[in-house]
Length: 368
Image 1 (tube, rainbow, N blue to C red):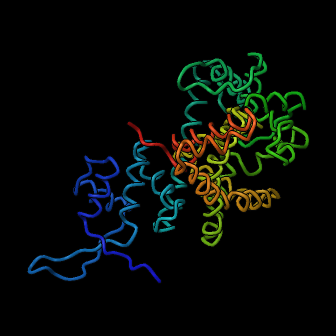
Image 2 (cartoon, one colour):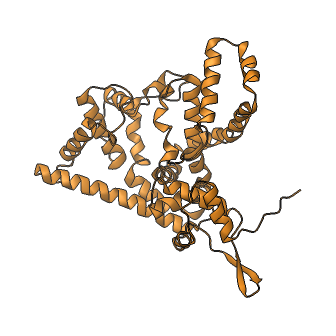
Image 3 (cartoon, rainbow, N blue to C red):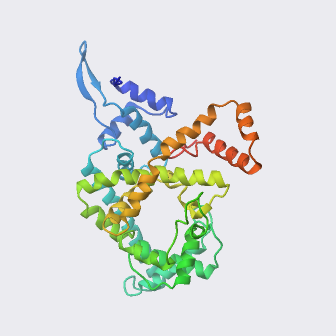
């Protein structure tokens, strides 16, 4: 029997926000969200006496809660618009396209400003001396430590790390294809933390990282910032809609998969997947991923995107099955595990803890 959708009033939305921990949510802020196109507008459905009655579309309460959750990580309206659209909420595609373009244009401008500042400090021309400027920026980035430093998943010598970062900037930020030797490309894989993907396997699957490491240079054709900007502009509305499910899978389900692998193995970077565990905590990644997927459509790599999207489609159901374990009494869980060895028991306990900690739920954790 079909479930009748309940009409939602303004107070229902405010109550949903309060119940989710956002007690500071107000009618004024809801009005701001509507003005920015992040929340739907209510429809007048009648009157209660002389007072008009306005209803919000079904699902608006959930949209508000997700919006507030994402706003704990960014206040950028353009980023928020793309994130909500990828999550499946009904936002106008033309506005989403404009927002994604604005975000990538902003990143390109920031990169240009960074290179200009570095060139000015060195007395160089940012265009004619681009290689030297990029190397200087890379050396600073590679050496930086602290909260905003690049991750260091695998130990790499300082000089080799700086060279690898320079090549990464050339490939992914500038969209060029530098001459990269195979050993240099292998160092890039270490800097990215993905090199274990060549030898470690998830269950019976083969290594996910195969082929020459230097093939990474070719990714500039569709993963680089300039090419992704072109992909956003050139893609049709139909291609945008078709890319939506893949973007959602990559942004929301792939990190869950990598966190599940980390829990099962007890290795935070097993098979080189550690760098993907927090994708769904950074809303900017949603914009980059939709651009990446649209770019991949223009390259020979799109079949890989489709394959991964299909494999990730089953993860919500698998996680739901895993959560049934949480309903078992502790003595029943202990009895079920008693017939297994210490390794299996430890794995099960790590998975249970990950479930309890919300590690296998998609999207950002509450900021408290």
